[in-house]
Amino acid sequence: MNNHDFLMINANKFPRETLPQLQQRLDGLSPESQYSVMSVSYKEPLVAFVLSFFLGTLGIDRFYVGDTGLGVGKLVATVLTFGIVGGIWWFVDLFLIMRACRLHNYEQAIRMMAYAQPRQQATQAEQAPQSDDSSDFDDF
Image (cartoon, rainbow, N blue to C red; front, side):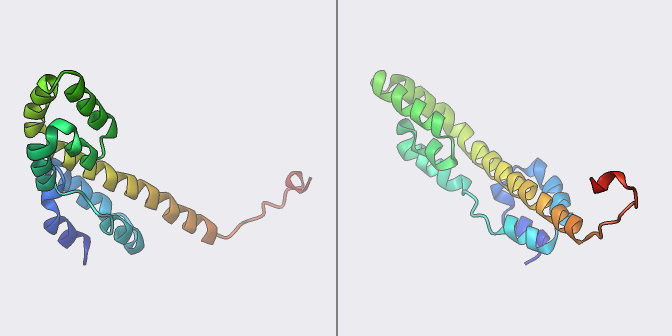
């Protein structure tokens, strides 16, 4: 699978405005690095919405997305206020959770690309021949 097919299949998992940037950055990677970015399991925004709809007051949707701190905060707010603040937060999150999931996937892809890029440059640096400038100062 090439990176164009990958982005076409997974376009719903990333914010629309970032797709051209992802395409450009994937084009600049080696095939091995592209595969490492494509093999990551990205979260499904629809699953995040369903979790938010049914278990959102407990913060399960935020745990799924990877926002552990917000998940704990949502759970604590629900328990301490007997569901009032958690219920309001749940309603607001119904509109925000899919975007948060897509942004998390985008950040994860960028992290993988940043991790793969230095490895590619390091491999090229190792293959470059070491030249000696024949000065006597580096011999000490």
